[in-house]
Image (tube, rainbow, N blue to C red; front, side, top):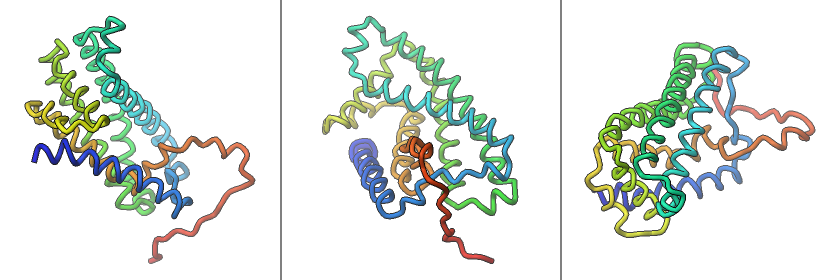
Length: 227
């Protein structure tokens, strides 16, 4: 099972992410949006959304750079594994708390505001809950990382991530003895990638540049049935 979850499942999740996103953009381009509920409750959205998005972006790019940059590059610049581990803990911890606080505000308004709840889909609420669980798991891994400040534990995940993208058949074995919290964090992260094309998260792939010169608004009829 370990080989499937960390050696095969990553390719399934990434394939669905890529193919599903392209298919959705081609088949249902007008659903490619964040479906903002700003008009229904602005103040809490602005604060929560700002905290959540800033925190998530820091975490995303931190993981992207930290996991996919070859270890040799860090060594060439004299960046020790222990220092890298400590910076990841500090930056990831601060960003994680920001994102968790913002996400809690967003989830609260989506669950407890009747108008927002009525205009939310199962996917809207479900993906936000999954992201919140993922953030909690990420913060919990910090306490494990603090016990391995030599950076050796992090090099395992760097080797695994690099192995996945270089089609290394032994990639899963590199994290075989990793703490269960890290494994759950990785599995849920891959699952979020798998669900990505079918949720509002797709708006992450679009920079709203064309809004500057678009001629007007496009009104799209909702697929929800009336009462």
